[in-house]
Length: 130
Length: 100
Image (tube, rainbow over all chains, first blue to last red; front, side, top):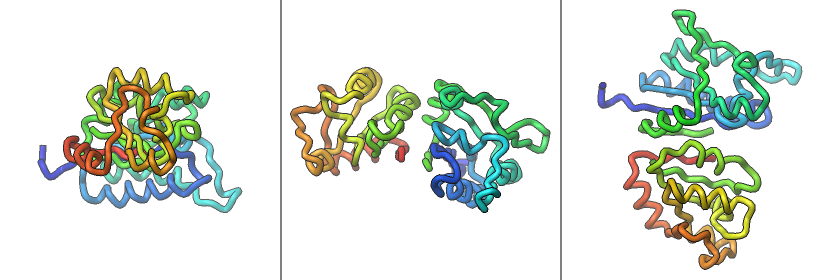
């Protein structure tokens, strides 16, 4: 692997709209994506609400940035990992989440177990949390 | 990896999530409002106690002092470090994950 390439993980732990963290995090991911690093995005705790299907922030005159997640595969961000335990704690399943199709039509939104997320996190060069 | 946690565990789920996901050889450093969790007698004491079997857990001493918390009442096994210790932990580990 190219030694200049770093493994960067962005961890989203906050619900959208109530604070600006979720929107800002997505901007950071998009800006960072142009540097062609090995990027993964994780949705943990209340962060899983960011990917909830059916958001309609137009009623509050806010931007529906959940649509922007759809652009991430075009920036080579191929994995949006959703912590399965956080979903269960919030009474949600994979069916409550938006789909983010990759070029080959597979879904970038991927459920991940605590064990797998723990080891994936441990392999990162950089972890940035929002 | 060094994991730093800065939120009180009686207000936020941050510490619990960190302890669920940190890999076995991780160092955990409690700073700012997270230092309350290092004290005996809180409702999260048992969480810290069981985590001590998997991790080294540190607490930042100036943040204890600032809040009037007495080092002698730390949960046994939690190590108090100063800013120099914080720097050492950051250098020793390949990466730092700041839980917010």
